[in-house]
Image 1 (spheres, rainbow, N blue to C red):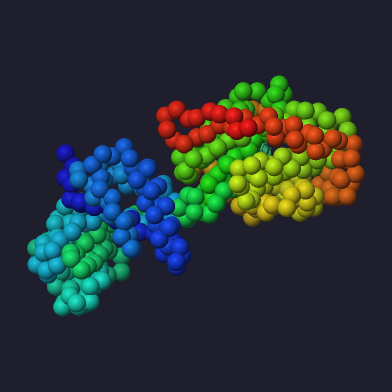
Image 2: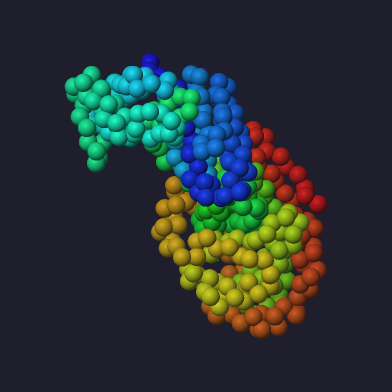
Length: 401
Ligand code: ATP
Ligand code: MG
């Protein structure tokens, strides 16, 4: 059986630390996230401090807890730790315990720091004394101050001293929900889920909106966005998915708009409906998976013509990324395999042979005069079906309106 050498995992916050007066509310959000995500571990004790969150393991599995923590946004890094009394002897003993039980350590370095400046032994002196004690008792290890296998960080506090083992990277970013809500236009493709992940990482709560055109699009296409939403939920808090019936709008566009402007007008209709839904859900921005120049509808002219129908900011986290980089990221967050399942995208149904790469907003506006724009938007918005994914076994399915 594996020996348990560490009693605690200490979580450090990264960027939250820069948030000045708001720091406390950020840290409380992070603490709530951590409690929620670790709720299946029954023995843990979680305590929030000014600079970190301390998790006492009480025998729960360190590696499992660590792997959950590493997916929570807002965490910079995590270190397993033990606590000892504030005496040099106890620190020596603690350092020794860790070096002895960490497998395969050949070189080490001590990095002591006094939070408690009243403690009479200074950091340099502590480094020397603890280092000497380890060397004396463990002849097989030596000191390497540049590239040690293990840096033993010793932090002298007011009541006790923590000694940390390895430091593990966290997911970075900001706690989910700390940046407000964004309405993500989620297709079944590779790009938009990645855009959602990057926004969740920056603290946004994701509301997703998907346009479907049954019977031209099937349940398989819907299942893809459901699975993608679940995947996004595993990183973020709750994700709500709004499914918009879009067939009527697309048929109206096909009948009234010249072929080369259909994609442009379709996107403008998506933005109009999304803007309405953003207002209904308290979302302050729209987001897409667009990347500059990737396809005809993603030129700057297209973005202008499409953007001009909404006053909301449209966030495009992937705008500067290459397809290969996006695909790599999609693989690392486990959305890629879902995205490449074959399906019918509502956009591919009426795909023009040659979409206009530099559409003009004035022309677009003129073509739209042949469409009952307001009525189509109103009608689609009224028939939205909303699914909620909150990570519980049974996700809640409900109609919003
Ligand atoms: P993706 O891989 O995200 O589908 P894409 O490279 O296929 O993107 P487009 O088809 O031009 O690019 O779509 C651009 C963006 O428009 C998508 O990233 C997505 O945000 C949005 N979008 C496209 N189709 C839909 C849809 N059916 N429902 C919701 N949003 C959509
Ligand atoms: Mg697509």
